[in-house]
Length: 168
Image (cartoon, rainbow, N blue to C red; front, side, top):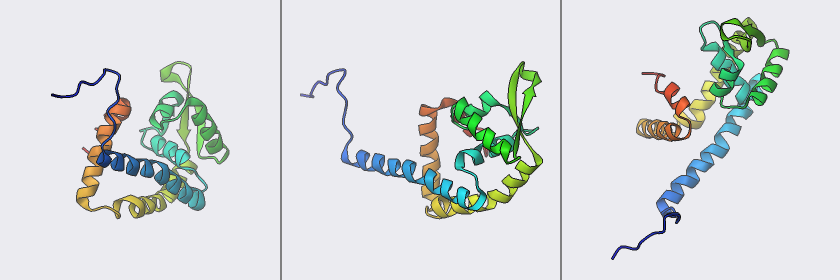
């Protein structure tokens, strides 16, 4: 006879599930700092600042309202404001009025910011290749992408919607 489980009882992870979970936590805790270290060493940017520059570069006019940019870069408005401040001091970004969105402020990628991104991207891609792409077989990479999309669909549906439009 099957064992009845209380409604609030949590089913523990099986050994194989626990091993996969621990491996994922290892990636989550080691990959961002490794990418961050390369960017700081080679470009004087942190990973979050680099992501902000990338998001701005993908906008047709190089500008994105600050609240939208915070959502896109997966950070709070406060964190974004500090990052944009650092990028402004370096001349890579300017804050501008966002007239089509009322009284909002947007971040605008400057020519110097675009040049910095173009200069920085090859080293970053090289590091992504070294740490992730070249470490996996094509089949593993396909499985990783599929698994990542499924997890993002649960944890951040707004990001999943954006990911679904990339490369398709």
